[in-house]
Length: 357
Image 1 (cartoon, rainbow, N blue to C red):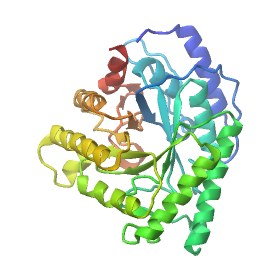
Image 2: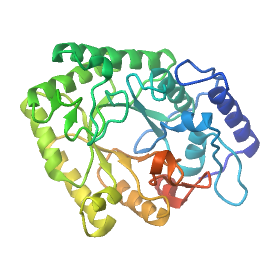
Image 3: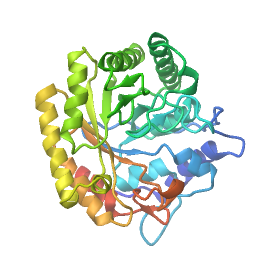
């Protein structure tokens, strides 16, 4: 990767950080942003990172640095682009988060920054006020007492409001997730896999809302455990049987969590099972596949690089590292980032080396 001029890099980074991190700015208002020169976007393989924590981190005083002995402070997304080969950014959206982070205004700030840097954008709707994952698919508080018809309308309104806000600042997402790691369903119990018709109705409400604002966006249904074929057969059999709408299948791949759940054989076995599942779902359902989340412990950077490189050789549309900037132990114990002392480890060199081939 060719290094860019340090002085111009620092100048742009400082203007962006000032815009995003003013003491007057917060996630519940529209923070001021200086005009950032628009950079042309890339095409082809998505080499991505979910950096949804970045504005909260900046507000709390966290800083990011270039790798190597001569460390220069740099805005995170530009750092990932210029030193790690990242060309795409993924951002989660919560409906009414208690502290404001990941609400629509906060997402717009981050998405606009990514877009001006020439990054492609994926929007990840959780349809919750907080984390949505296999163990937590909680209905937004304001929707809990609504019948399914009203929840469909609320979902659609939330999606359209978010995407219109993005389009207003010139951001058109390339991909949009309808739900995050919805292996058991979404907004439980209403959208459980045990209630296939309602699950499909909710999925389709999100799909049609996306297409009404961003008709060219690829809509992703995203599950965890990319190595677990049975979970993918269950979900996508449900959608196929009930005329569910989606354009792409999204997978998470975390060998660490697979091992915690009893998987043996090491990260290579987990990756091989995921690769086999990718081939399986592509043939069975006829849809492309995206690795929407990947990660390994921050102190296993060399192995993590091997994992990413391995997945980039498979038949996928791209790979997104989940919150690479997180230091060890961040947010009450998250250890699967790939930064150390504020700078990227060699893990993301897999992206940089992929682009140089």
